[in-house]
Structure formats: C-alpha cells, structure tokens
Image (cartoon, rainbow, N blue to C red; front, side, top):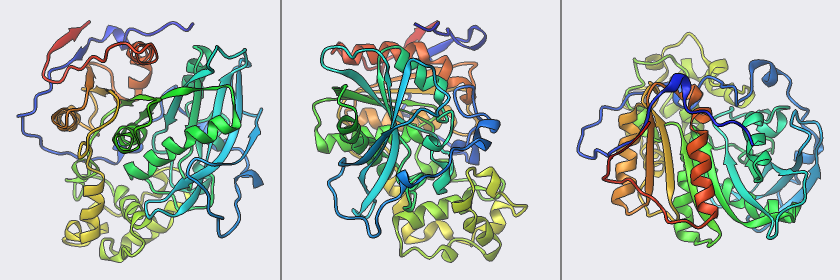
Length: 413
C-alpha cells in the first residue's frame, strides 16, 4: 500500500463550517478548466507522446441506434505506461448527447492483475479534468492516461478504475466541454459498458473527478437522483466546484482571450442553433476554429483580449443564459453522499465559490462532507487529499454511516 501524504509542507486542512450567508464576489480565470499539470497528470512530454488514433475509435455513420451503456467493442491494450500489476482494457460504448442522440464514447478500464475478490473488484468511475475538445485529446490516447500514477495507485489498492474520455474525445462526435450533464452521462454509461467488457468488475461503484471532472461527478449524483441505481455509492469532487457562470462572470477585461472561444464552442455543442457570431467578434473566430484542433486552451490563445473577443451584451443571449442555467449545480437533489475537496489557495475557483455551491447542495438536502485545504494549491490538491479520499471510499464500500458537515465546524490537523 502506498504511503499517504499528510499535506504539502505539513499544511493544515479543515472540514469547515458551510457559511451560507456570506456574499460571494465571483472571479474568473481560464485556469479554472485548464489548470497546470501536477505529478498525477500528464507532463508536457507525455502530451507530445500521444498514441495513434486507430480504427478502434471509429464508428459507422450514422451511428446505429443503441442502448445507453451498451458496449460497442473492447480490446486489451498493453502500451500504456502503467505498473506491471495493472491491466488495461479499452472500451467503446453508447452514450447520449445533450439533445438525446446516440453518440459513442471511449474509455479505459484498469484492473489489478490478481484474482478478483468475491463479488468482483469495487469500481471507481473516474472523470478527468479538461484535456481539450479535439478528438485527439482523449486521455486514452495518452501513454500515461493523463493521470496514470494516480489511477494506478487506486488499482494497486484493489479497485477497478473506469475512466471515460467523454464523447467526442477519441470518438468522432462533437465534444461538450464544460457541460456537466453531458459529461456526467458519459461517466454513468461507462459503468455497464465496462462490466460487459470486464466481467471481473463488481456491482457497486462510486464516482470521482478533478476540476471539470469534479463538476461531472456532482452531475452524476444529481442524475442518479433520477436513475436510482442502488449500486451507486456517492461522488468525490476534487478542486473547486462552482457554476460555470460564476467562474466566468468577470472574464471580460480581467483575463486573456482564451475562454470566450471555448465557452462559445461548449454552448454550440449543446445548442446547435446557437449562432457563434452572436457572441464572438470576428477577431475571436480564428481561436474558435482552432478549438477542435488543439488539446489545451493555452494553445488556442491569441493576443486578442477577452474584451475584444466578446460582443456587447453577449451574456444576455437566450442560449447563453440557458447554458449557464443548465450548468448550475444543486438544482435537484442528489442520490448518495458527496465529498467535496477544495483549496483555499485556488485563485481560479476561490473557496467562496465552492462554499456557495456546497451551501446550495446542503439546502437541497444532500449529504455533503466539505474539506478545504490550507497551504495546498490546486495543482497539489489531488495528491495531498489522498488520505481523505481513501478513508471516504473505504467507508462507502463498507456501508458505514454517512458523515455530513453541513452546518457544522470540525477541524482536522
């Protein structure tokens, strides 16, 4: 079993009181969805060493109708940079677009090479952070799987990890970046597909994600409030959880011209009738057109400022408003408990924004355990919260009582 960190530099972390009456001033930054790599994520050299996009990812056009979660195909894959004790199986499966259309999503199932326990390996569904919106940006096309060491750690602890790419990453469909519900559906439907490909998987599962993936797994919890899968045990969101609108609120004039093009792309993915030029100026169109060709927001940046990229009153566009409303968390009750882990040093998603969302989740009756880490930046949060992650995961699979600190103040050192 790996050594678990106590926190960077002996940093103190707190399970904090949810202060729901404090007014929040939203800030904005493109780093909210494209944070700096950590040791658990792909390094720059790994990003350059991408695996080839093979026929495995191709589907017939038009895609024949299929049940969500139905496996299209799978293949064992040995070319990832993983420990010898970890076996990998690629999967291709049916998911659903925001418009309810059949789409194909790809992903990877990681399992221990040992014999599974009675009932099969307990399952962690992994939702990755922003990797780009182009087809070649799929984590399953990275030799290190974007978060390879981190995911391998959980496999070595005796869990199976099902890591979706999200539809349109890997597969030839329009990716829906920043859209919580679309990404959440891809996570949920990866589970039955993974079980069809790898029979050693157990029935019970939980979801965990970072950054954009953290929003996705909160979306999983809210969708499961409708689906009612008795085998779903809860979700862990690591790094800031905040509504897209709140993160974006003060972008114009305060950030470089990186996110306007991505936001417009995300809205267009959900609402095909959206006219991009109703939001973006002609100066922004080249950056928009490069979204499907680049695997980072930074690579799509230009010298044009955000203010020059956006048309006046763009935020009053009806479809922009619908997109922001669609991606507000806590609008419906969640099934299963939530663990939310945030950093007090996160300038992209300030702790006040995460607190605001947690307050809303608590008011909806959700069972939330909210930790904030002092002295640990967002780049190190995933690794430095491992002890709390594992403790919470073990408690869920052991069916222990759920602990919620909504309205309470507890300190941990």
